[in-house]
Length: 296
Image (cartoon, rainbow, N blue to C red; front, side, top):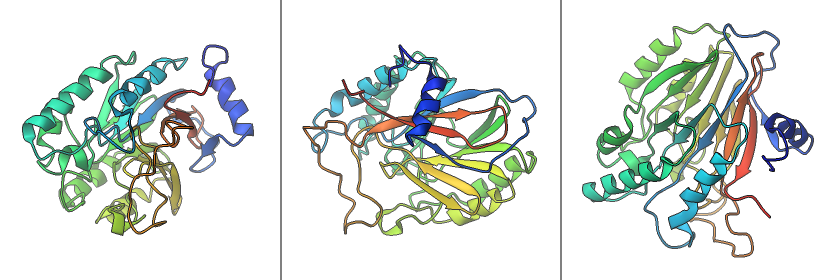
């Protein structure tokens, strides 16, 4: 992607010819009240604090991702990190140190509207206590240019559940929206049973999907599985993001979910982030997958 020589929207149109843009959701024709074109960036699974194989470049990968996002033109409206900001540690002091370092590194992002949800590496050992100290709430919603955004927490519970209290909150939050409202939901784990044997599921995720089902234009973006993946539950599209530290194998493709090996001939292969464009007219979000480092 040559951001300095081609407008991003022109690039999306050209890339669409080559299949680089994945469209989801229902086709539409109307404009949402107060809607405007905009785009945001999703980054996931940075695992700051991870060292060793399979990423010998782990100490600078996040910085390179920040530089790549800063090079986008025009800049995104906001940025969302969908969990596992840091790599797990049993030491509460080390956990906070890693979160502080992560926050310092991403402080170099030019876009200052940056939002977060936790991953299990951030939150499962202390039920999100340290995460909340550094990044705020783990469950929240907000509205932006005609779209309603919802952030869920399916990691602070070590049993990988949302819990009834959060499900009740979700139902009450969505009840304020019309059935045709455009809604984007962020989670870390998938809400459907992708590979339960690999912890790629949410124990009560089906209940959340049932709550979402009445809404015709709802899309879910998540992380956790360290690869691009697209799946439908009814009319609801679920899109997994690549990791910024190491890729994982396809769901259930081997006995264990061991990371894929680093390829010296193609460093950063399988790693990346995405930009998601929302049009003022109802319809599918346009997804553009981007590498951490552009090829020469």
